[in-house]
Length: 277
Image 1 (cartoon, rainbow, N blue to C red):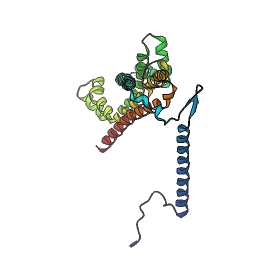
Image 2: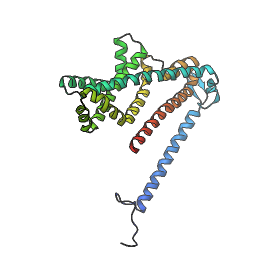
Image 3: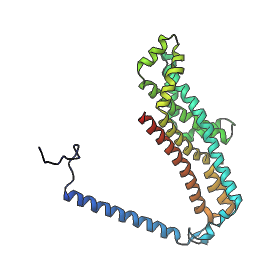
């Protein structure tokens, strides 16, 4: 009808005055609760407290942060960060190789290959990463570093294998048929035609899984690997004292957030690029 305004919403009814008022009230109440919790946390952390019979000043007191004036402290923190990144980098490369192997065997036409691979893959997917690290550490003499790396590589390799298998399954059948019609074997077709496309298509998901892998390096704390959390919250706290536990915790948190958020932003950027193509 001429002169009638066209509604911008066709999937739901626009909220009326009562609904808008309720939404405003709920938003204000939620903001007040969040602000109250934030204020409570700040005052709680700022208050002096007893630790092992010793009265410590509040967490924001300068005397609890002066440790970071010492260059040796930053050197030790840097060594912990490097240990974390080293384990994550080696485990990521191994996980990608294992994932490609799992997806290749998992999509085999032979049931004698496909079924045992599925059993092994589900076993690694179902086992907690920490138990896998502990098993490797107890069953062999490879040391804490390789226990962390192999545990992360096997678990995440199984996940990446399923991701790649899903990517292969999503490809049009014509891709495989075109390769076979050119005289390529099934393995050559998968290696040179299907895998590159599946990998490119699932790259954002794979990068997101590698972010999880990086975070799981913190489990190395349990098996004795000196990643960043064990370095700061165990060894440095033991050496410098409980006075600096909160400040070291905050620095460790900021470092982890910086690394993980950077990788997550990279994964989102890859996803947007793939969608825009």
